[in-house]
Length: 457
Image 1 (cartoon, rainbow, N blue to C red):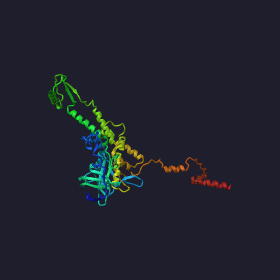
Image 2 (image 1 turned 90 degrees about the vertical axis):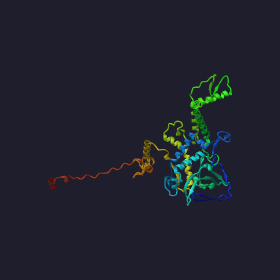
Image 3 (image 1 turned 135 degrees about the vertical axis):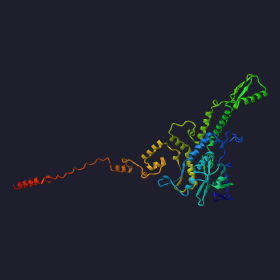
Image 4 (image 1 turned 180 degrees about the vertical axis):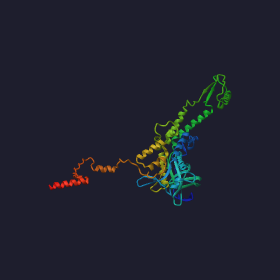
């Protein structure tokens, strides 16, 4: 079978003649059902879906925190120099798609949808659009439930894409080769091409939390009154029981709760259900929320569940970064390095400094420490204040008494601890008698006359 697919005005030719394509999942990606809450639940139409689990506050809080935190990081094109240092750069071929990935999303929303697809479904599928040169010019995050990975017996990978008008797929079903798809998975314990969502581990906790909230809603709708029974020690007929029940529910439940009831015939009111205190409602909700945070790798205090540890805020954020979002950002970078087919020395990188913006006092102290540690003024201005360079600020500063290691090595090579030979004394020439030069003319004449007489004598 020969397929010609028009995607974004570009023709993709694919021949499936002789290929034996085997779908890894007939329902798109990983199973839409997160898991069964109990054995046989699927047959009874009791299921945990990504949509229902997301309606629980703890799941939504973790989802929102992770996607928006990664979405707010600056995604930039970087280039590696001969020293192995990555610096931000510009390229006419690759920079435009990183600023505007497609016609209807900003780069921030693109990143949020990409990460959100992994969190809820375990997989992110991105369809690439190319120009006539073959350069990727647009990226479209696909609905993971409408994508099916397929593998041939020799290991070649293809993807069946079902109709998606927003992404430019007009046909009901098309098959594209792996080179046209960016596929990023969460952890894949069952198959390398099938990632598993964190909801697989915490879906039951989410359903339990929703059940607690639903029961609580019914409880408070009934005027915070638990279920109960009315008993008569001498017994009554069924007709009388039905009449008393209807009258009781009408006159003393719901909005009528709190009215005075008069019971005759020694009727007694006995509670059947536990109230919120007896059932430890708050403790159970906190337990389910903590289990969900653990599955997502989110410290509970970041979603206002429990108190924060007694550490500095920067330490807490670094822990959150290393244990929760670092793997997501790293996999995103590597997937787009390959997906955009970036040649060396180019790459895609998130600016992690955007994750935390220090307060004024801390930022000032860090900037001062940076200058004394070898950073230039321009580097400090850019990193801590987002300001441009100034003239003369490109050179790092150092104190005068500091010596380089090379200078110290040269000094040590000349044996600086050897005893020095004292210098030989120098003879001073005799001082000239300049007395005559300082005499007045009359005294000088008398002195010469006296000298002549001495010689004549």
